Length: 481
Image 1 (tube, rainbow, N blue to C red):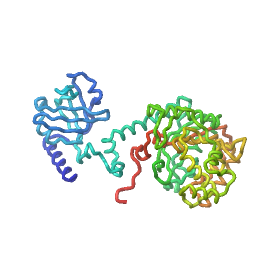
Image 2: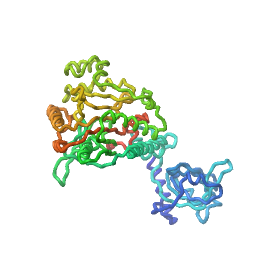
Image 3: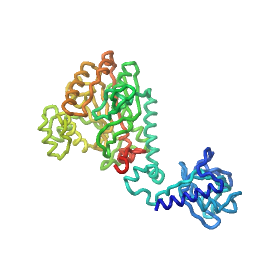
Image 4: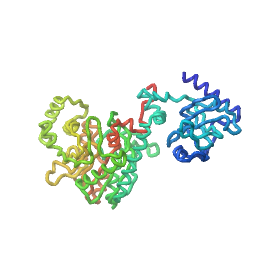
């Protein structure tokens, strides 16, 4: 069917060419937005352009709906009003999906519909494939994501998500800049990954003839080097990449923000983050109350504090500071949690057990005082060296933000890197790589610092959508593979 429609469109394209009308002319075409045109009084000369989304011919009068980014407007082509142009040529060869420009005048139909009456038409682009049915849209999920440009054209909710994503990141940038943070840009290609527990993507750098990694954090170890260099408040918003599974809450490439604040600790970090989240949520969505999955979440209420060790013990009966791998594995089996046994160790087991616990916590609040074993970059608590000054934002059963008082003791950091390296050699591909160049930087001295990172997952939660629906063009397997 689409092949026949395409053939018909090609015939119409040739008809325009035969009449001396170029079907793909160069720009520019200076136009007013449809919203600007609709604001003009009847009788005002106007110039509008867009894609034809509705086409209805009624003898010597044809009605079109043109759509541009600002909205839709009706265009009336009246044979008697069209100046020096062949009415039949245009109405017989225009199609849904074509882009046209219209010079005309603001007009109101007998039924009161605000319109433009056309005096002259310009073909701006002839479409060669038919648009999907305007009522059904793209019903197949795979097609909707693969041909996202059509989904964005036809689905107002998908379009709104693009605008909300823009407001989300711009409001975050505005908030941080308003508090003295400097926006920085750090490497995406690294010889050693750092700043997170994740499996990286590996590629080959031809000019240097070395393998490099796509970063798994948004410049954590680089921004801490900037603290060594004397910068006191920095942040970066950028892409990061993790070569792991895909689900509603996890994608392989996505945008994240990380900030670093010298002369601060995790308590000050939590206060700033709570303020940041409330600002961003309201600027993006106009509310602080959200339905996220099965949870009703009010970001405006006082945020709770959940201590890591007591919370897990209360929910499972296990003290994670005084347990062993078989005990945790038995509990995971008891609560029916599936996990990858490759490289599985006590650290991963405790983290997996915590993830089961957190799914039952609505928030909003902060998970605090996490063990050193699961926090290789966080500063120890002076009152209990087995714990760290680390915090996670908890919303709707998930972690949507991670921060801590940064470890600035190079001797302690070197020892933790060595432990992570032992885990990697034992098969844990998500354990962190040792970065001894970073250790050297720390030996020159880094002031007390709080760091924090939040990804676009927060936006997914606020919109109550899965990750792929919130990305403008999500990664898809090529068709046929």
